[in-house]
Amino acid sequence: MADSESKPSRAQASKFAVLGMLTLKPMSGYEMRAVIQQSIGNFWSESFGQIYPTLKALEKEGAIRQLPGGTRSKRERNVYDITQRGRDELHRWLASPPYAPPKRNELLLKVFFGPAADLTKIREHVQTAHDHEAANLARYKQIEKELRSQCANEPGLPFWLMTLHFGVAQAQAVVRWSEETLKTLDSMTQPKSARAAAKRK
Amino acid sequence: MADSESKPSRAQASKFAVLGMLTLKPMSGYEMRAVIQQSIGNFWSESFGQIYPTLKALEKEGAIRQLPGGTRSKRERNVYDITQRGRDELHRWLASPPYAPPKRNELLLKVFFGPAADLTKIREHVQTAHDHEAANLARYKQIEKELRSQCANEPGLPFWLMTLHFGVAQAQAVVRWSEETLKTLDSMTQPKSARAAAKRK
DNA sequence: AAATGCATGTAACGCGTTACATGATTTT
DNA sequence: AAAATCATGTAACGCGTTACATGCATTT
Image 1 (cartoon, rainbow over the protein chains, first blue to last red):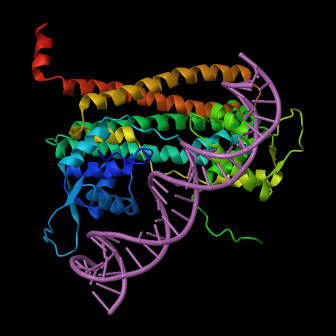
Image 2 (cartoon, each protein chain N blue to C red):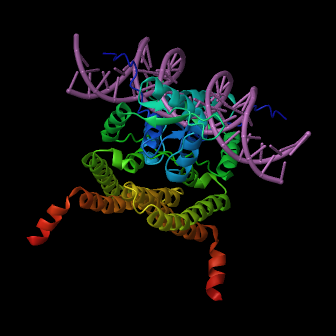
Image 3 (spheres, each protein chain N blue to C red):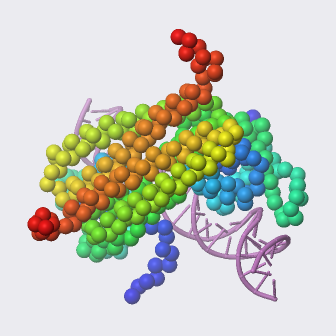
């Protein structure tokens, strides 16, 4: 029964991200972009160039359908909702093991090539990463407060908190690593004479 | 003087990864693949389809040059070495802020859509991530021992340890998060009656 | 003699971002 | 009236993996 899917591809994650978003509520492509950024923006992203064609394709295969033009506002908005068939497809995808693409961390690559680099620049990169994740950490704490108070009854809350806690754990790890690494870099940059001078003080 | 580079592109990270590897020692494309996997494999990867064309391009622009056929072994091997011009280019790239591509974590995406999923499957995904990172952690400890003993005099050692420690920090974060998350998932899966039964025991 | 491993390369494909094009509506 | 925002969509491009093709050398 219609298995001519040809190429299994890597995972079609974008497709299921879009499909999944419609389990939260019916949405237009434009709105979805904003909702993605606000909800899963810390670990996922989709661009318009991805969202619009995906919505078209999903509608074609009957996984979603366009809601009759509510015309609540006069602007043209194509609002989609997930169908039962879409829910089934999503359910299957959620059960399949998550695809883990090969990791790539440009910061670490630059650190690794340290001997060929200007150490003060490497230090800057690490410091920037530190500040960035420290800011994230503060943001996450704030988000957790808001989530707990404003989404107390949402069935998704426990899961949203799990993803948030992942972000917290990861940010903490980077912050700690950066601090340790900055110390090491400083001790390498300072010539022995400076260290001796510091001792004399 | 020849600035018709047209498109700046995102970063050309592969190009500089390849270039950087040649600061370790002269290598062939085939060997480089193996060295990449062994040294920076935890946070970087390059495929042959990327390495060979990149080597050709780098040679064309004078950043690397082919070593005269050592003919030490009879097999055809194209061994490349970095040139001064290549070192300069690499130095500039290392000084530029690392490009951070939008994060994508499929595991978290599946967790986020938990209410639309089979919870036992989500639990499996988290458990798999846990086991995977726990194994990594053990591996990293082993690698650190080997590095410290076998590369004690390498000028790159402190930097290699930094990248390794990043891996450790990250793996620890995932392990801790998974453990917490598994507990939460279990408490959600067990119906109240089961929890009550457990209490009676 | 066959199988495995070394070694290089190309072509196709997937998928994602960026940039561009278009136009309506609301705000300043 | 101009600027900003809402809203949809397409085309081009970059870049990375996978698969394929080829052939020699070594091991079994």
